[in-house]
Length: 212
Image 1 (cartoon, helix red, strand yellow):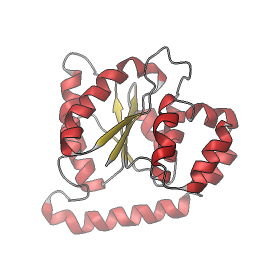
Image 2 (image 1 turned 30 degrees about the horizontal axis):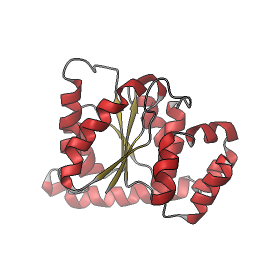
Image 3 (image 1 turned 45 degrees about the vertical axis):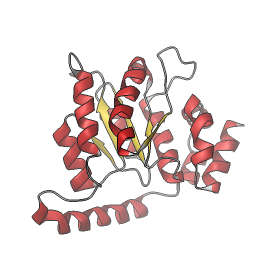
Image 4 (image 1 turned 60 degrees about the horizontal axis):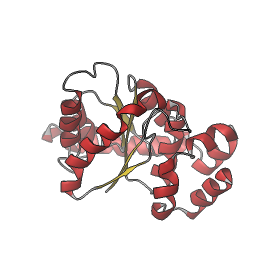
């Protein structure tokens, strides 16, 4: 699985620590981490949490990433922005229990973490335990076990609802403010990872056109 990490501007200084923690957990499981940035608070391109939603949608809809790890100060803004887009199912995660239940019950593809709120001594340990529980088993396994069938059925219904309530991503990208979208796609990781991993020619062409 390709797991993308995205940090917005207020918490960019934590990017290296988050990336190192994520890699330490998921790489032994056989997953690959692509760090899209921001890499530091001094990066020229400053991502807002709204732009995190745009970039996440591009990665998930194109197949360039199978899962996105992101967040902001509280995690709430990033979660709301990500869920504004088609095919992105983002949970607001604060604990290992949240992570496990979101994975098993909701079977999402993105999490938004609070990288400032209650992130003090031991914060990196909480991240480690969150990542361990998030990826310890294939998503959608259900919890408790007697609820597996209705939970899986509800997930399929939600996916169908999102198909109806959202237009396709290329149309969305073209209708959004051009500078807003270009800013979201100008982080270093897009050039490094996106085009080699994108599985959708239409989205790749749209991204190239916006960045041109």
